[in-house]
Image (cartoon, rainbow, N blue to C red; front, side, top):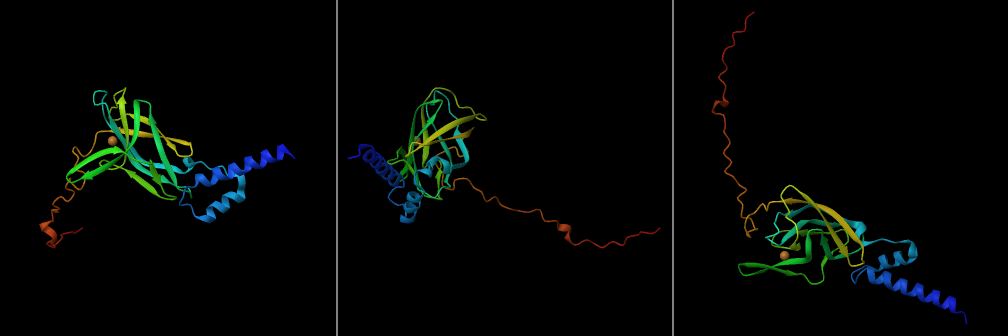
Length: 204
Ligand SMILES: [Cu+2]
């Protein structure tokens, strides 16, 4: 018997289990194979592939009590990841929400299973859709300021980003094409298009 060796083997085995659990059900097989080859050296965290573009927070006061974080999240890694929670310094409670449309009403609720983001894919957080909900605000979030949001992934890794605090551009819940982009585009065409070629008296 060699107890040390047995323990070592057991540790390796559970590490392999943990690695394959990380990849999620949709992970292609070759991916799992590659990870196994590299062994424990391949220590990639879900947060490593995190990027967000145009992150912003709707301005709100302590009296408002709550607001939301928006932006487009990208997962640049080659594994599926899931954001399971988030934090903000001025929010006593933070939840991951989804918008739910029933008839004419759009409501929101905590999303089950967090925000999955496929390998190489992205997920848009927008008014009426997915968003990070900041609740129990302890400070006003004033337009023009910035604040830090932290997201946590299913593997426990975290990523921070800075979001701009802005007034909500669309004042109401009508987020589907409410604002008329198409102005009547009446170009002031020069009626003088046809120059009269006036004889230039350009004499020296
Ligand atoms: Cu919400």
